[in-house]
Length: 49
Length: 239
Image 1 (cartoon, rainbow over the protein chains, first blue to last red):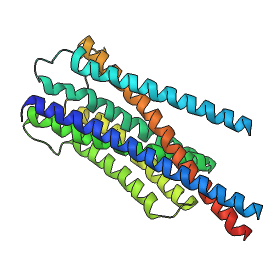
Image 2: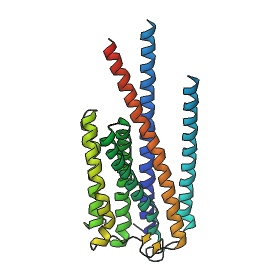
Image 3: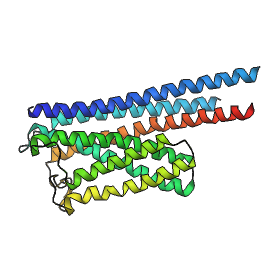
Image 4: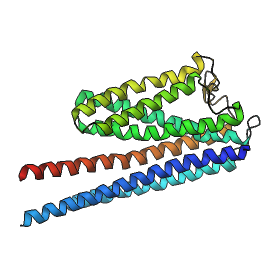
């Protein structure tokens, strides 16, 4: 592999790593936000009964 | 209620501002690495990996320092808030320490002729990564509570003590890894060309902004988990 190949590999690993971590945070955030909303809705329904 | 909405709106405004600023800083960093800075004469193109490698190392050290400081504050004040900061920062630190351990060997192969050597700098960095991976594993394996927070705070503090060893390893022992060029006895950045110092500063700035952005997201996750647990507990006791 030439110098350009090593530079490309390092560049790809860094941005892929950061991107994967950001996406994982956003997905966890979204899933928890949905759970929380659902829980609050259920509580509101229960208190209305 | 309206105050709550205002606060949320303000938070989201700050969040978008930070996203925008970080994106701009990352674009400036890529421009500086691939267009602005000239190719180094001795190592050639591959030397540009340094502008990812050093900021990743800086970010992981900074993140582990936050773990260290938050863990001390948790043991002192026993407030969940500090435990959340420590946990969030440890995860980010491990991500960027992994990038250090990946970009290092990619840079080393064409220069040293080998991916890895068991010298003091490389080995102590691997040990640091293992300590904080075990910190995260401990948190995943044990149930939430003050005992988990206490044990992980102890690991968080002990792990940070490895960082001065990593920093001084290239001065204390004979290593393959080069000695610091940014902070030298002759002065800040005196071992490097001005354009290289500038590119490195832009990269360090971009990665620092990225840390605050990721930290905000990660803290929000822990707070939402706590809120869900709290609601579930209250519901359980009310029935």
